[in-house]
Length: 203
Image 1 (tube, rainbow, N blue to C red):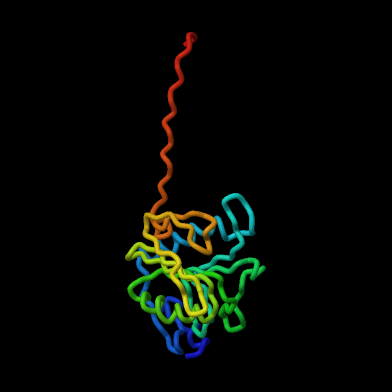
Image 2 (image 1 turned 90 degrees about the vertical axis):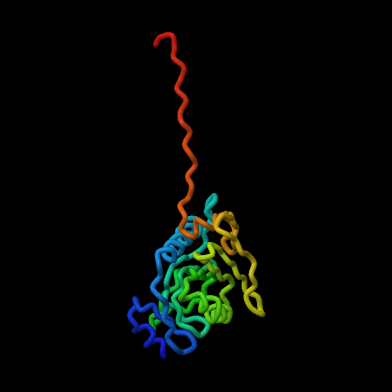
């Protein structure tokens, strides 16, 4: 199967080109979608912008489900990011219709139909391509696993459950609760009930 053949497959078929053959993913369920949306939204505000700003370090281009050809596979990661100091402009598809600029971070949201591929052939391909950080967000076990690239393979540098607030590299400048990335609603601080002022002599 060629890249052109892969790209000709309707997007709703959710196919990726791995090992020279098409690998089909199941349609994502609501939990997968909420995790993808939750992680993207929690990272976008502080990071998907020019560098600088209190509590908003910026310096990244973030996107989702980009058609890419890296590490010998045609893939469509759930979330992907490039450092702006490496890519002054947002990477664009080449003449074939795929982005080849190697990301600095990839996040895959695990599901029953993708778990084996995300942990297996895609992990190996991302390592081969030189992707420094690889996240695996698992709605089923309600965990985040952070892998950091070393010469011999990816090393696990963080595993955290949904109730944990983490500084997960490469986005360790801002603390984020794992559950919020999984799509749980953020708890807003309770507003204090105003205390009535004491009556004056005039009324």
